[in-house]
Length: 467
Image 1 (spheres, rainbow, N blue to C red):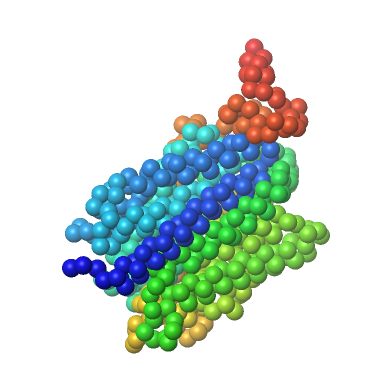
Image 2 (tube, rainbow, N blue to C red; image 1 turned 180 degrees about the vertical axis):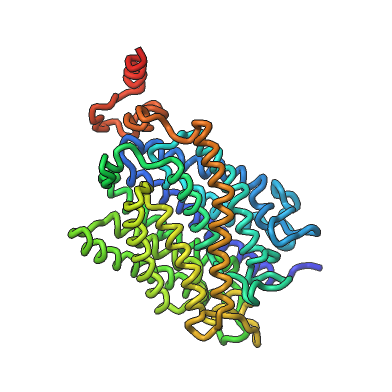
């Protein structure tokens, strides 16, 4: 049967919307690269830039071959735990998924590896990035996606075979699926590697190691903010879907509201961090504000489509203090994460899931997951009278992600550590990864601080040290 003109136009507009959202999410890779480069010392700038490129290219191949299938491979042998179809995009496009959907989900997958690379920056062998990035984007992350976002996943609010606590976990754009996964993976990597040389003195007191370029950090933050408008509103997948329970409303309304809640949560977190760190440090810190802003975005990502704008302000306010508190705790525990990635993405991601269980509005939940079907009922936020079902599902998601990523990525980092494939030598770390691993510095006018300026100089010094 021929497709009607109206259906063709609707499908075309929805496809363009999804592709445009995918492009916005991909721009976040540039944001990550700028943020990471500015947050490390100049002698490691080329290394961290290259790892961001590697995360994207390795993640592309692994997600194409395995990741999409493990995440969304629904067929005759479907199960609630892992996908079994569509390896290397076989039988795609089909009635459920097309190439534009793959591209959008791919952009999410490579973002996870970028989060983890920030935690282990400035001291990691380049070859280990290839290993962990492949496993994370090709297996670990896609399995969690299948649990929460596929129509048969055991945590999914769209599961057709029975909902967890009659609710399923609401993680609309990935506070848990993306950010908590990446944050926990980074936590294990940084913990097993240990702090950077000189990060703590002989008495265990932290020694500041600030990034070399605040301009890049601010640029990266704004690029990430821009990309988040594809990350959160884009997760509707389709924009031309009308709601029968609300006159003149549809997904286009939800998309606009989601952009507003995203902006308010991030802005509130940035503002609270500005004044909070001022009280603690005694000065205004631009870099802390950037991380606070991102922490608010991470937290609202779970419930961005199902909460009121006023609730987003509550989300951002708490997210800022979660990040500040975890950063203080990490220093007391002598944990070193150059980009605060585990604290920001892990801690704020976990808070975002809990927040959704407290503040999700029933009307918006029905619109996001049942397209506003008249008479549809779903559990919603505990503080709005929705009972414990949704909150229970949210807590379960936090716990199972912590467990799953820990039992997969933790052993991987430990094995790489034991094989001496994870951390570089002390001499190479002090000299800088750019000169020791990549043949030269990122900047022609790099202040060498007593370090060799060219790769040949580095080799001569290494030869002299061995003689």
